[in-house]
Image (cartoon, rainbow, N blue to C red; front, side):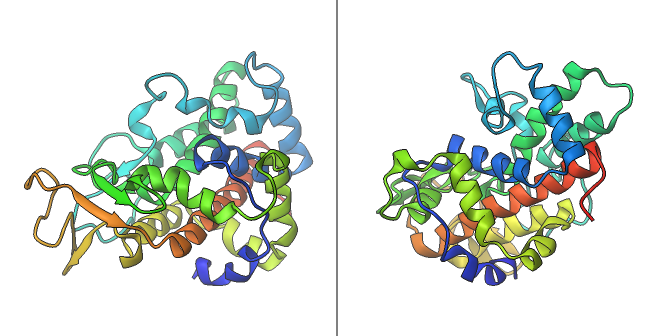
Length: 288
């Protein structure tokens, strides 16, 4: 439903030739920062002033992905069973920790009256990243194919399916005629917010975390995403193989770049608005 409601909004979005990766996370956090209440923004600024590596919140939001191994690696995603029907509780179906629990954990640290500023700063940077991650559809996926890393993509977004969602699909959706060097993440975020009507913001931002995860899972498993084959209530790796590893044949797919690209951009927008909404609640009085 969110995709349908935002279809007209997406026609007016600005462009870029960057990949989702760092750019996507920065756009999410720039959208969020622009939507903060004065109280929440002042607290974000106060905490970021203590950071030795990043000048702004937006720049800090890819911090969790830095170095050879991402920080708290198992919390960047949530794995689900092949016969998964959807989330009804904020729990990780196949692990003790995942992106769902990470969001709740770091939100609690930011809201705490006893956490140190150092702990709050770290949780702020993690939370900005987690909210972006949970909105990347293949961060809610299957363990055996590593969230689509073990599915090959040919065509415009060649590589693997997970990396296509991380980068190429969003890049393709953003690419228009404007030179990439003229479109910084903050400007892209501002351009997005300028064309999003208030009714759309209100509809998106207050959605509960379970809806975030369920929407990502739905976007990953719709037929046009080419992530899996529906077999009754199950979502198989390929038409004749339930799980990757039961066959040595690697799936090769060609993505519907136009439809999937608009989904990727919708998810970035939703992540930014929802991150702002959460930060406004844990750091200050939310906007009326």
